[in-house]
Length: 516
Image (cartoon, rainbow, N blue to C red; front, side, top):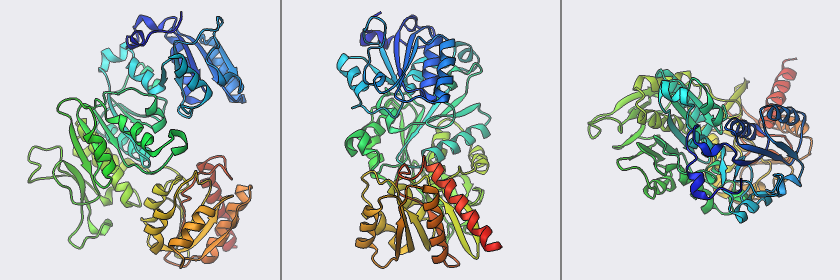
């Protein structure tokens, strides 16, 4: 068929567009994203080839399923991922659909750029398709509410999904969380609303999404190795605001997100709505504390809306209270709830549904997850904090902390983190095969804090057990032992979840031993 000119690909909109049939599509990666993309394209009548550097039993089973539904070929191995020319005549594909982890400088993506072959994310493919015709006829097009940011995306999208469901909408969390977005648009019943989590990787390969409302929660240094520079990383995040129709939601405490909104090309009439864990100004959602400034359950903190009402100069709408949260309500969780509420309110969700959504929300594992309390010491698993920005949010939620930290640092600078939280630290337990960067920051900016290191073996389970034992020896009643690594996990663990589970097991074993 040959490479489609760009303007021909521009015509690929909707399920019935004739250009899908016979389109040559190369899909990179046979994970969840790649499988859904290949399955969708095969259904559309495209000629599909999938490439993946590594095989596994699951991938082989998925490959067999894809062959049954008409995928032309699945190629495994490093050689397969270095070229785009896999079709029988040696020609380039018309389109590449890439999984999020594939860097722009990888051999295959670079080859596509050199050949002039467009590269799309699964998000862009879903945006081009929209809902199935039968779902569109029954429900209309779903509202897209999109979320990105360095930290807090999953929490915010999960809260947003609960608010939408509480409002009687058929809604789904999708994208970088929950179901693949292509499964959502292929659902024959359709959805009223999609709460879409977007990573910077996905946004890099995605056109403007015409979202009803969009949000950037925060921007901090992360994934610079993938994007090349922090500026490129931020630019990809900022793409989420393009062509937003009702509300661009941003963090009043993070000036960079406001600058992104100011520079965005939005639909005429779209509003800038901010959130802050503080008394809100006009066009803002915020938190009103009690007269003594208390923010706990007894303090009666109230989440309020001064954006989505006519008399916002003089009035505010109560959305929820801190008592509505299920368990701990640290500042960053309140901010996530306010961001979710701002997106939900842009879609017409009622205030009482915001409260019901917060009440229904249950925090996911490995994000400020209390796992035990013994002898007045709280043990908390925050393994999902894989960068300094996320760790700062969790450390700020507690008064006196024995901090278990470290891992694969990804070139992070820890100075600002240690400067901001040094006063809370009572002891630091350094985990990870190379914790030298964090150790150096602690020596410079918190020299008064005792540090115990040496838990650097490649056996992560053993290293974690020893780190927990060390924390147990040092922690005092009234303190919190917090696993919040501020680093990736791959030096000692398969994932941040594996690291968190190792912490939970080590804490449980330690408590069982004490009870004997």
